[in-house]
Length: 336
Image (cartoon, rainbow, N blue to C red; front, top):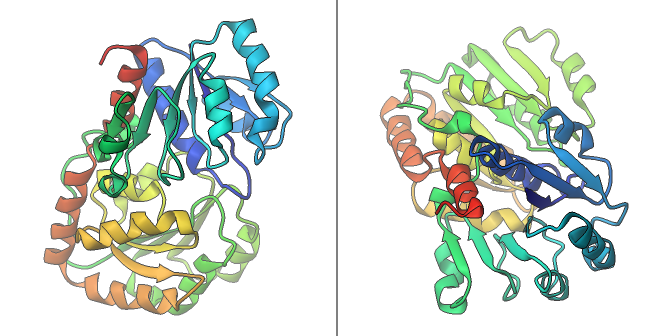
């Protein structure tokens, strides 16, 4: 049994939970079940939909040290051998205390301090800047985009079909959209240029019905919320606009040319590296610049340039092959 400690809510959104679910799915395929350890009930519906066990700790998601006593009791009660931890709220004390009782596997993308864990995972494209291999001499390291934890549907996607012009446009905001960027993009782009515009709103998006009503006369604009098959929209899109989280890696596996933007500091390294590598153009931080104008400019750049979109698509699929969750699961089960 693999135990996974993570959370999901309207502040941290869904990224941590979704990548952990991808790992749990891969573990199940090789015969190991998973149980999620949660601070509260906000993720329970999603976890039940995916068929996993869960234990609610009834603690605060942003103060993990206060749950240590509860976790230690659970470790003894269920004879837990290993816990996969995925949270920005961890402290050195939290991880050090837990590591006395179980093996800790930690997913990192911030390098906040030297983590006292047995295994460290960083699948981000900028992992080299953290010098993990110099710092962690006794820790097992899983580094690079080959360990990107995406669902099985992103494996072996095949070469992207590149149309002469962008016909299908995909807009995504992630779990939340506190800056109402989806609405701002729709206001600025030339909607009539596209045959279809799919707008994917996250689970915690609060203006879904208002947005639908505002554009109900636009017969080529379609709205969806918290979709379960987002890969379908990624596959059929000629171009995507997305925030700078794990979704960018899913789009890479699909080979769907993308324009990124950021709204949080923890996305900066990600989007900068994709830009530097010539894989995904970055429109800026919505807190600091006119992101919408840059998005419109990039759309014009790509609109009738199939050669440029094909080049980006090939680089994207060369970065992510969709097998990262499987590689992590096999390592956790001891097969690698």
